[in-house]
Image (tube, rainbow, N blue to C red; front, top):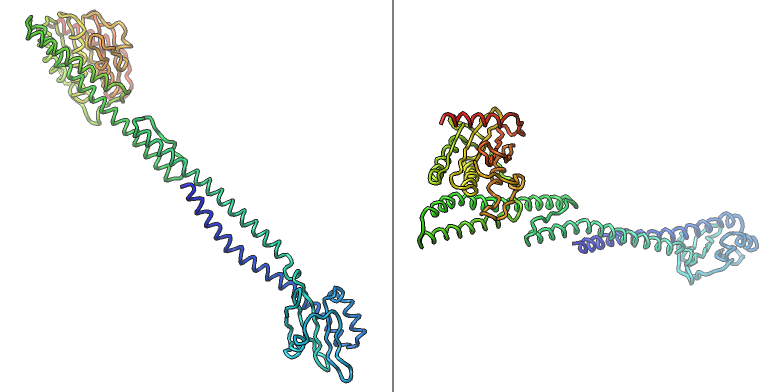
Length: 460
């Protein structure tokens, strides 16, 4: 594109220079010719008064010798015969007698070609005939200044062509470089380099193409992140029924069939963990609930606790629920809340011993809803690491995704997640769900939740 633009500009500028320079050069040449013959006519007219006064040879010789043209040897005078006086031919003559006679007959000035230049023959009427004044115009005077003017025109034309080529080259670079960068970024994106972007510069069209490319690349990254997130979330949700299978397999006793079942469940768990980690290799984007989505947290908690209570009864775990007597609307989609609760309750069953009690408490405030999931286990040594995205090391079947699902759910509403020590003696995961999207204002929520749990315990 760059060289094509240079060639086009070179061709157009050359045509423009030729179209203007050639006619201008011809005009200059014609002007020089007119200037030379105008001067010759002026010299010839200067002899008219002398011829009208006298035709004496001596006087005419003096007049010719004292004139500018005559002094340079470029003037001649032809006087016809008058009476008995013979015809006179004074000065340096170059024109032929035939040309002189032709001028007398025509009665008007004419130019004839002579060796070394031109001769202007100007007739002058006398009382007894027509005299002719000859002015010699050398070739050098006719073309005086023409060569210099043509050289100047040629230099100006060449300068214009060079300048236009330079400007075209700079414009080509300004167009080609952004296009090359755009092509390179598209190639990198096609090779899987998702961070490839281009600077939005250059002509308007290329800037718009750069903006569109960057937007497309961001959308591709977002789509891939969403796919990985969906794969990870779906895989993690499989761990809930896997937990049930593992617990049921543990109660099958001894025997080949029971051992095969437990082995199959462990293998399936490892495969699910592998899928989760693979999907989490790239940093995912924060998920958020769609506009207008929401659910009744109390109804969802009652439903999930009914599911997990059956397993808790088999393992001898005490279960307590509080704060779910009335509807509690939150700006979270039901599947997301189900996934978060299953992740937390599944962690309780997975990471605490059989017989460990746990509780779920809901506190409904004016601007926020707090969900507390507590257990009487050994607690979490490093809460900050546990909350970090993907912090699971794979030990004890942990992928680090469960708490991340919970954290993303809370942050999608403007809330957050905290891990601390529960009143039962183990871990307490507090989910702060903001109802109006503002950052949470924390004051007194823990004490209110504890008092609610105590009232529920005393009631039972």
